[in-house]
Amino acid sequence: MKRRVYIQAASQISIQEPLSESWMKAPVICSEPFAKAVDPPFSQYFAPNQMRRSTGYLKRALAVSLEVLRRCNIEHPEAIITGTSFGSLERTNGFLSQVCANKEEALSPMFFMQAIHNAVSTTIAIATQTKSYNTTYSHSRMSFDAALLDGSMQMQLGNISNALVGGHEDTSAIHFELLKKCGYVGVKGMAPYADISVAMMLSAEEDQQNLCELAGVRLLNNPPDEKVKEVTEKMLEEAQIESIEAVMTGANGNPANDAPYFEMAERLFKNKPLLTYKNLFGENFAASASGVYAAAHKIKQETMGSIMVINRTEKNEVSLTLLKRL
Image (cartoon, rainbow, N blue to C red):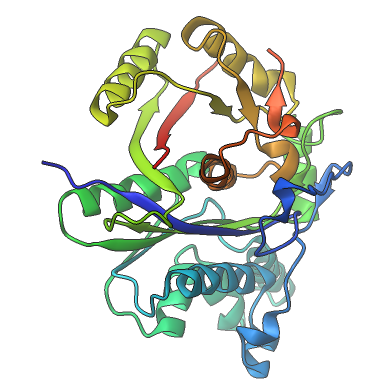
C-alpha cells in the first residue's frame, strides 16, 4: 500500500509580499509586463560575506527554503529536490559577457559556479549541513513538476519520510526581451514575467496542521483529451475523491497560452470553477510551483478568492497535480 503524502508547509518569494500569505487578503496587482521579486531582509539568513557573493536568485531560494524548514521545525530534510529551467540568469549573463570581454581567458569561476542549475540544491545542503538525497531537475516548464513527482514517489516507496521540494526561476531584462519577441511574454493584458522562488515540505506524517494532502502527480507529454480524462479519473479514484471542486489552470491572459486550458476545461471539467494564479505571481518557467503553493493554502483556508477565478493545437505538455483537503 502506498504511503500518503502531505504538504506540511509552503512559502514563496515573488512579486507578492515575501515569505507571507498576505496575498490571500491583500494581493499586490502588478501592471508591468516585467517585474522583479520583492525580496525579504536577507541578513537573517546570510552572513555579510555571503550576502556580497550570492545572487538574488540564490538568496531567494535559500531564504524561502530555510523559512519552510523553520515552520516545520526540521533542521535536516531527508531529501532536497529542486526544479529550475534556467538556473541563475544573472550569473549566466555575467559569465557569457566575461567570456566575450576576456576572449575566453582569465575567467572568474564564481559566475559559472552560481549559474549552474544545481547551485540551489547544493547551497541549501551546505547551509543546513544536510548530506542526504539531493537532486535537481531541469526540464523546461516541467522542472518543478518533475521535482514534485520525484519527492512524492520517494515517499510513497518508503525511501524517505520528508522532502524539501522547490521551484526557483530567475528572470532578466535581456531574457524578457528575447521571450517577448517569441510572443511568450509581454503580450498586452497578460501576467507579468517575474521571478519566483517557492519551497514546500512534503511529509508522510499525518497532522491537522498540514496544508493538504498531495493526492496525485502525473506528467503527460502532448496527450489527447481522452488520455487526460482517463488519468484524471484514475487519480480521483485512487484518492477516493468523488468530484473536483475547482480547477487551477496556468492561464496567464495570453490568448495563445490560454486557449488549450479553456478548451480542455470545457470538455473535461465543464461547470467547474476555473482558477488562475499567474495574475498574482507572474509567468515564468517554474510558475507551476506557485500554482501548487497557492492551491495548497487556498484549500487550507477553504476559500477560492474572486481574484483567482477566471471566465470561461499545438504541442501541449500537461502536468496534473491533485490536492485533497484534510
